Length: 586
Ligand code: ADP
Image (cartoon, rainbow, N blue to C red):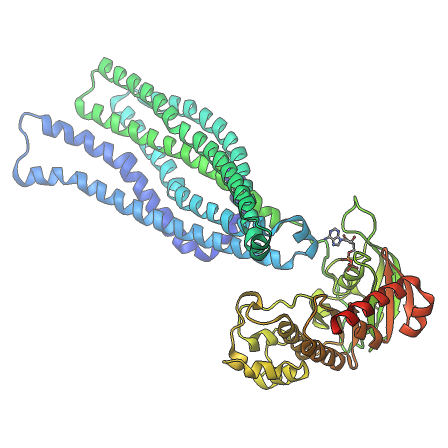
């Protein structure tokens, strides 16, 4: 069971194989001294102590010190084994954690619609944590205990050959299956309960994560009590589910102790009947104890393993998720890109149950053109632009860049030729310079400044206390929306990609920011292919062409002058825009 489930991870032991070998050896020393050494010492010690001519002086000391001697070996073996096996276990776990994280980086956006952020965090941190504590708990038992069981059985065999009676071994061996049955039954229940508990831990994480990302909304709508109730329900559920795991985990040891105590009674009875000497009797009791101790511990370990299995299942869910946007097997060469983009009968839906979000879209965008995408909310504009960098793949039809199907281009190559400026410019908690450098990792400070100048960001950055070294705070919270936007435009300048995808902010910016951003964007558009999800009147007017989206289709294309008189939807959208602009200005 254990080997089948965890065996595939044994290859990760390779980098720590020497430490593993030391741990293994120490475990064997522990087992031999506990299971064999101790009963043996007892067997010869007790008769000496009860004999008529008892040893005295140095002889007595030497005999007595054989006990701490055996315990010393046992203790050393115990410690070295536990430490080195935990050492190797944690190294394997670290590799697993990294693997899961790297996998998350590679998975397509669609994966994140199906898996909540809180739950993913719980998997990467919580479930690996569960595995880690399981490793620490399990590893020192995994080698030591079975080996002790074998050593103690060996002692009983040895004793049987001297005493010429095999009944002692039979007693020891007969009670082992009686212990294994409850271990197996309880293990199955635990696997199920632990899976449920960990899932609930993910749910709790999700509630917390959602709460922490919406602190302002919660204050504004007085949702504190509702949130506390939601959190409390999730906590209570987790408590109940965790307690069930504890219950089954703890029931096993008492059962095994009962079974073994009965076996010990049988052994005593036999010993009295056979009339063996007290040394042998005491050593049998010691050996039996050393036999049952491992069975008991392995019972506990089996539960911990079941617990860990539930966590491993949840991690493997991430590792084994298929990439719905697979990278090209033989990527086409992709350089000197001009930036022509063509959609050929492209349809897309987010999931099979719902209707298409894009429906047979065919457009051809010449290199260097700036295209404004307009249309009512939900018409499919965002989806349209997300298909170009392959955040999703078209369900039907194809998309070409300079005549090459995007599916034949290595994803990293494809995305290296695009710059994305999103509505909510997201900054990392780092300095401003490094935030701009995301566009080009090895850019010099001069290049960064040049890009910031082009993005009309240089002046406000210089005016900050630490200039380009200013830390922006989590998610850029210390900067205004317009400033964040300009930093992300500077990124795009630095990246110098032939294709720009831009989601214009809907929220109103102050007039100066608005003007600065507009000017920066015009500069950025020069000589590049630009797709803008446009909300602003001025952007729409400046575009080379306008695509009007409705219900997943491009219902009209052309210049403002052509569209305004001929397309009703466009006219109404445009008039609404013009009206709001007029109202905010007056
Ligand atoms: P627009 O940008 O024009 O407002 P979108 O492309 O964002 O439109 O959305 C088009 C349609 O797809 C909408 O009906 C929206 O509800 C749906 N949609 C967007 N994202 C998802 C998603 N992750 N899962 C399911 N449906 C989605």
